[in-house]
Length: 226
Image 1: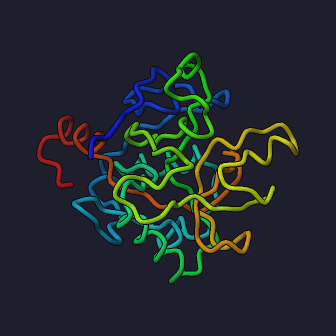
Image 2: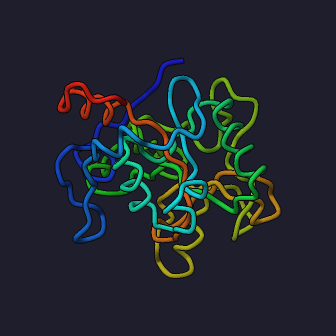
């Protein structure tokens, strides 16, 4: 299956090794910390990538953070928020949530609704075609379709507005766009499913190895064990 990528010169979409300005003033994407990368939690693995759930890590277990802070915590460990790119990976994350009674988690999913996304016919309408994994910039399948190679559509069929996700429900409440992708655990009596959520909400998260950050730290720290 061919993977499509979104190439953008903006801060939220593109991991960078410099300090890039976020979509909230005064906030940046962080650099990886070599010592943390070397000793990063490796709770479970899938197809060569290590993962951890923040609720199982001392010092993080009681933390709930917004989407960007979740990315930055993961990035310090040469990881990023999880990108769920196959049905097997999705089932693995769903099992983690179910077996630990996790109410919700952040993923790296992001709506391309910021500077650099305008005048892109391939992303319109945004609610269907504008979602991507910020950790690796891969496009997410159209939200109204079963992804290629999957047996189901992971987006919920209901939500606050009692309609299929993503529904951008909070925009009608307070004008805030639901631009980040969270996995919710039966919040709307819909089982475990994907939902669009406003990025300022605070949640636990799952981190996944970032090959880009691991390669960067390996290249700048000869001999380091990762």
